[in-house]
Image (cartoon, rainbow, N blue to C red):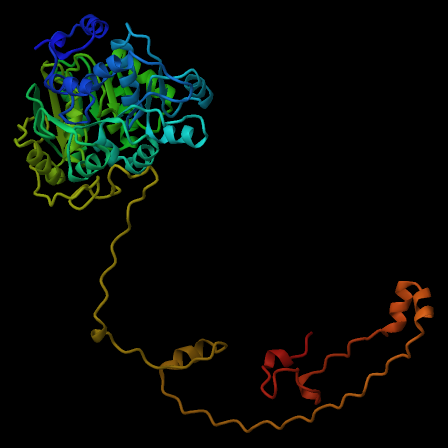
Length: 526
């Protein structure tokens, strides 16, 4: 089947031909006619099968008629990461070059004024990440009540990154009558429930088993001790004919460390992770696509949607915690029917993660030995996610997975368990005064005779208070004629406090305490 038989217009067919494509992929062959019919689509296909073009091409034809209004986009495409959003924008520029369509890209790391000016001109296609779109919406810079087509791309990645609540808020602001295209590489139960909520009588399109590796990828697994992973990676890069490759790490700090190590060994490498600024990420990605960078050390931010022509290799320096992420990582190579190679470096304690991956893809990853390095054996695991230094891992390193930060500290030694309560020795009963000396504390455990009771103290006679003498009040007129200070001094005579008496001089006890007065209150100050 050719693209002409799918019902696309002549300008779109010309753009596809200029790109060099003649035969549609299975997902494109099944999805494009359904999108042109105006029906909702639930698409599930593995990465690298052309999902982006399956909704970009028919959307360009649909948008060729009509005109956009200021701050009111006609279509909305939601992407989980900036790189995916930028790549979809590139596809619209490539396939829509013969159509006059306005497009806006709302992602983080770009100034708000530039994005607001693009929205004011009116856009036919709005490509955005959920967080930045909500920022513009809450500021009143965009209206979503004229959206005719909604595309939710990489829905399973949205779920992993915690964007589903934001997506639900966005969908609640859209008109009820719309066309929704829902695409995901995997279809877990949570994604299926979301699809049932967002879609109306959808046509399900599945071209391959969920989360299966492509047959064009030659896989390999190298099991070595954790300390030998760097040497194994360098040996693989030197022994393989690497045109360009991505090295995936689980944590951002490992990306920076490994990038430094590769640069010291003369490897043309770059780094890409989520803590980099958007201009730096864009610049690094452009250099890698242009061939200026041979090896790109990256986190999972580059595991989805990154399309680099003829990528030869993918190296998993760390085994991914999620089996689905393994499929997405190695899917960066072996695209468009070409052969690619993927190698995974695993430590012995990561046996549980490897078992989960092999169970998901339905096959065993071939074991490969690296000359000069000791080959280890995978340990049986319980399938739990662990980082380095976990149970069965290297001692002395901090535990934690992909979310571990740079400030994590290793845990201290574990405390010995306490003895059961019934086996503890009873403590000797002792009553020691706070002011007692060391001798008294040492002899506290010896049984002592009870102290004799003190004789009750005699109640001191209460002091008779003489009645206070008040000066006679002056007439109101004479009193008002005097200055305020003089009037106050004559009105209230000066009172001098009586000298404090010691407890033993027979004076009265402090008021409010009765007969039981502490010694420190009755002591004469020096």
